[in-house]
Image (cartoon, rainbow, N blue to C red; front, side, top):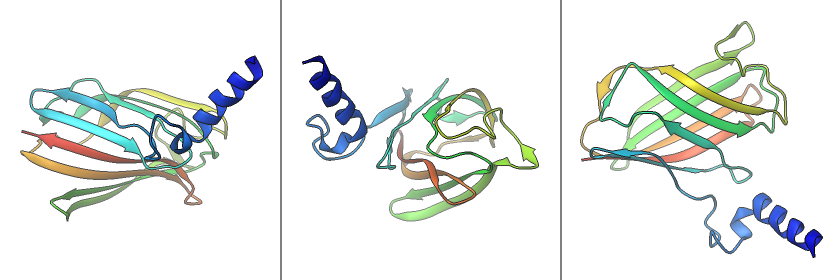
Length: 162
């Protein structure tokens, strides 16, 4: 009986869209932050795995240095790692942004160079431009990928600011 329970639990973790809890809709929606008229939600768009992400202080006034937490188990080695971000509002593209996070000659974070199967857990500051988030609803597509274009993490996020 213990073997069956363990196998069922493992099946649920590996194939979340087949389990009864998600109704075939993929990974659950996570709350990054919710406070003072700002709510940020995300759902992994990678069919193979989910990940964890949060922001320390949720504010409509985005500071130049925010603290984040990010955790994932790697399916690929990271020699080089890139971030693509696409921001849309009311179906129109507002911003497209690409950023090299790990480069062979210039690793910016301690997790650069990690190997397949290792865990990335980053808790710390991220530098970004300081600005106030305008009122409205925004959709964001974030993708982390390697130099071989292998997906490390992918998320569809929604930002609601009132």
